[in-house]
Length: 282
Ligand SMILES: [Zn+2]
Image 1 (cartoon, rainbow, N blue to C red):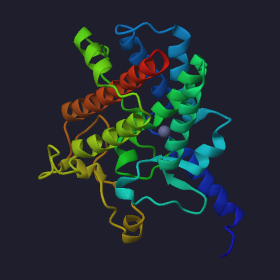
Image 2 (tube, protein in one colour):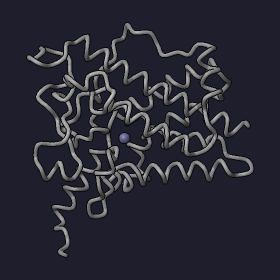
Image 3 (cartoon, rainbow, N blue to C red):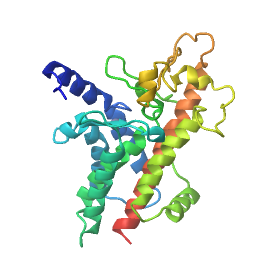
Image 4 (cartoon, helix red, strand yellow):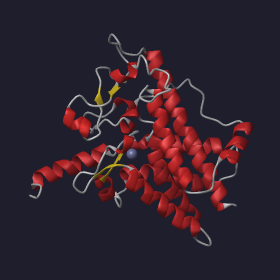
């Protein structure tokens, strides 16, 4: 086996660094803060603890200390177990997510869990769960900065109300949340599968028959080599506001789809908050 030439290696690493992004890194922090604000209506949470969770979701894309892990562990869902490791690079999230969950569990197992550290680590776990609402990270469609997925930077309409939870929803969250680390894996997988259903790429999805979202994120890729590696590809439509090409979704349909994925992200974020509250204050 020959060694990868240095230039090839650096290209690969550069691709890895950029492939790690899903939602704009700033958005992970912003969405997590919105979830913390909503959760504050359900339970008391020290401000520094909420800030630590938000910082953790951001750090998974930007932290200097974990830069090497980011290069070698990409943030793509391992759809049907097809996205296999390549050289020393894990193209799917399986291993890194398991590592983050395990590190969180070790903190929680301490006699007196260091709360701020617990929430920062939980933010790292939550980052991957949030990523699973971004179609390109689930289909999966490889993308790098420069050809970044427009969904990542899509702007939610400012006139829409802030995400909030009713008292009933608070109760429901507290009742339905499990207390075993397997729950976090369940949240990740359900978020990914729900995104696939939403774009009509799983049976029982709303548009399986028509599958117009296939024009945005197609699977499998047409190139048989790419398809065999587990990749999908972008279609002919772009998830962005502007002139609508024939066969593409209207502005209202894009807004509605984004809102649905946004709400999924926020719901999963408050589920993680409910999980933490059960784990650290049993
Ligand atoms: Zn990510």
